[in-house]
Image 1 (tube, one colour):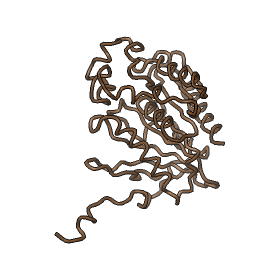
Image 2 (spheres, helix red, strand yellow):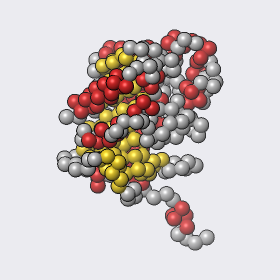
Image 3 (cartoon, one colour):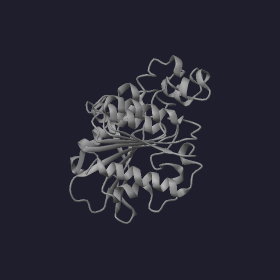
Image 4 (tube, helix red, strand yellow):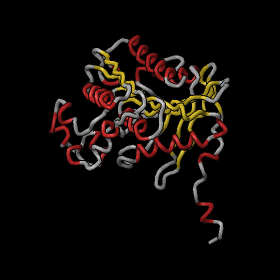
Length: 291
């Protein structure tokens, strides 16, 4: 064996790799699509899309966006499906507002159980902090996630430094699904649910169920949270967001619960104008807490 071969087989430091070529998906916005942020043995490189204002001035605050998909699917390029036809799209709007937006991939439950997903979100934050060439103010990071990604964003905001968190229709307390879910204990004993696949066992018997629940990590030092959830959510009970808001407030932290009447999961069942309103309010919340 050539003496240099073992070293050559090691993956490079992703923080030292050049960014992918810049794209211009919308006026005033630059996109670096598919930047590797971590190399995990046995998996494909983990990538993120980095959206930036075209004419950035001072160090940029960061939105770290975590996609949904029941931890088994989903894409970093898509927010809620009802935003797919927006022009400009939601990530471009965030960048135009003055944010660096990192929308991340993470290992899905079919390849690795929890806590791999949270480890990946944390690795993305580490990569952003290491990219001194980008002039990012990572101390002003907002975690933002929807559905499965909302649980991961909430966990990351509660376990690592963050300026704020936006959680759309996410879980907060997996063991409490026995009380909150219409199917009760039969749901938490089912090995085929998305939550069971994430944990590697039915929620009722999974050793990590509490650890993977944001309410377990609430303290008085939690960052401000904006929790947005529809009253008719048929996949993640609205009570889950109520539960987290109550826990945050009891601890002395700042929590805003925006209940969307008539909305099912992914904002199905409400007019497009209401989805626009939810997005605009969420972006205003992020701006207010990074000013």
